[in-house]
Length: 306
Image (tube, rainbow, N blue to C red; front, top):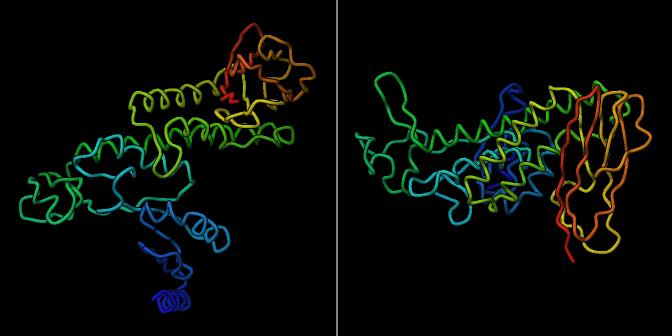
């Protein structure tokens, strides 16, 4: 019962304040847990409540998968595509979640884990385990490797965010507008759009990971060019008075072009601000910087809809 469990949580915190309480939950409220871990489908259905709880009470928000969810949700079953495993940690980044709880890492159902019965007994295929015992430790499955790749994808997105956060701190007040997560989220949304909507095309995922890596590297090379648009890239813009605000940071003294037209009033700090009215036949905005004889360009593409 929710009330009695919440009372027990309070008692533990009073008695042993240093003890963190983590719980895999299938309800919306169990007291002031340190780590809430709803199942992925419950997190999807009740996300506004969990997020509100995290904002008001603190603590961490993770998720887990087990014999559920199925269907459109990603999971780690043996008979699913490896892409479903890999995008699990794209969910972590998209929703800024704090962790993932393994169910069935090595919960074998028989003495021989190298059998279907060993990793699946009574549960969906592979649900009990994604690693196998070896002579010198655990041996990973293809699913475990795919999840590792998803964690690395998360780190790529986080590294890009972290680099932009550093640039914001270095520039100071003229970078007040810069949201370090926005660019990573724009790229993340090329692959995944919700808890259960994501690409089924592995090539798109690979291309996006490569794009993230290239942007990380570019931010460590001259000339500097940081661009942020409002609305974000990929936003559907209805017909009518279409306008996109464009802000950016370049090296002091650099020249900036927006779709071939010079951007005036670049500040001594390198901050510039301009606007763009997308024509009906061109959804792409290209910004070019020229500094010390070296050029660099970035593009943002929007959805122009009637």
